Image (cartoon, rainbow, N blue to C red; front, side, top):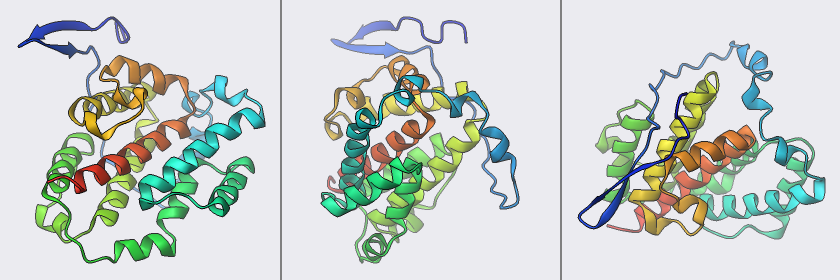
Length: 242
């Protein structure tokens, strides 16, 4: 962890600043799912499940604006359409009754509306397929055949890749520093390579140290929700550009 959050080393190359980070991608573990594995319940005592005290200590009213913003973004990027007032009310109640952001996401992508979107007969763009091919090998340690990806549509690809990310994040949570590093490298690369896809300053930030510090300061569910939104938003963008 020495110098993990140290200053960036910056070189000027061809008139542009190239930021060299001290943070590197951790070894990507193999993800194996075991329905009988109950170790998750022991992990709930891990520090990563109790981090983000600044947010946790906010009042219900103060948290509400963050929750509404999350829900609005979630519907927009998953379904490519604004959330209805009744959707916001329904899932805001879920969150305020103890539900979590990942659970809300899964409810949305497993419902009949999303299922119908997955059944559309439309070929994903070449940019989307190329990105998923690269991303899955680097960040998930998985290799998908391009022909298999091309047989799916945007909606199925978004759900598949995000699901694999969430599964990996749960495994990386055993070693929080690896999780922060994975998230930092991932976020910095997406910000640098796909600047046009982002509107918020946070998502546009190209320094891994910034994203590492952010991930270390927020609740675990917020890291997951940011991955969900970034994945869907970027893949929407890539599917529209060829």
